[in-house]
Image 1 (cartoon, rainbow, N blue to C red):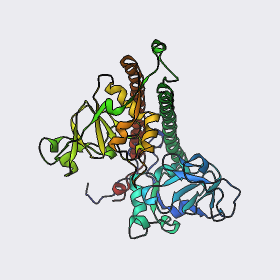
Image 2 (image 1 turned 90 degrees about the vertical axis):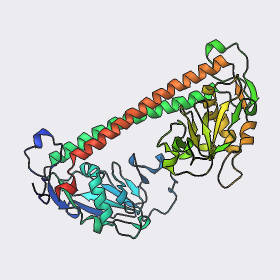
Image 3 (image 1 turned 90 degrees about the horizontal axis):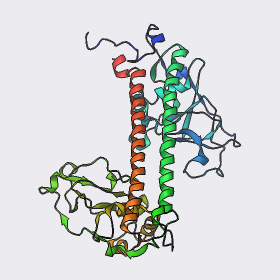
Image 4 (image 1 turned 180 degrees about the horizontal axis):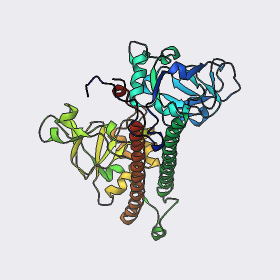
Length: 415
């Protein structure tokens, strides 16, 4: 076959009942959608477009509440519409509308014509090949000024199955995967909430000397001891040159590599790959990595390897045989320490806690056996959370793979 031969306009994966239905048809979006520009209905609730949740009531988000603002220019949307961010459609910022309400005039509202499934197209608009088209037709000199008005949107040619049943079949398939993802997200959120509650119960609060929740075998062991961290830990002080061996070949950890709350390390590369040249701290599996910048982000990692880290991270290790490394991890993630760190980090433009203030923290410390019990309980929960996170990632990757096969690749089909 010659390289300029046109490939059939069909997806790689097609449901059996449609395999003999012929190629998908192609039409400009302006023949499949019209634009809704209804404004002035100020009695409807405000809605927001969220990356993962789609169109939701604004009150269910963490965004600024605009309920008292002038809503006369806000646009009405109804179930079955598709709304997209005019300035960000080149990134795929669009969603199916499942409830009536008002959205910002920064959005464009698309209404499907008869025989067109908006749920099907809400997924179609998320495919890489169509997002490339949205970028191509967006107007503006730089990313921050790119916009895709309906007039340009309407000129984009898209492939789709002419039979409404096939559109619906694809929509139902992907919607069922989304339902599974939503259920797994709820499970993950429930585990995280459970862990947060346990952390609050397993560590003393305020002036308390015992936690509100204590394992039965320690009920008669008396109160925990208040000990300044300077008597329990040591913080690395000497820096190394990351351009010299062996440090240039070791993993380099920056604050951006530590995930908030979980402490998971991600996206690691060697010091030479990262191109770092300024002084770094050396660490190994005895240390805990604590990011001193913006303590509210709660970035505490427990590496099981040797490496180097940013000067904005403290490598901390127990210096006393009365403190277990496994317990120290959760002590530094505890609500009492996070609040203390936030309070002592607000002096500069960028919040950060210095080592003197960190060492001055009065840590409530139980006997070693109780430390071990608490650490085992919380690490077991972390294992469940990690497992659930991987399950969720697998589902999202499965959905991505399905979408790549359920929609034709435009650069091949239209070549």
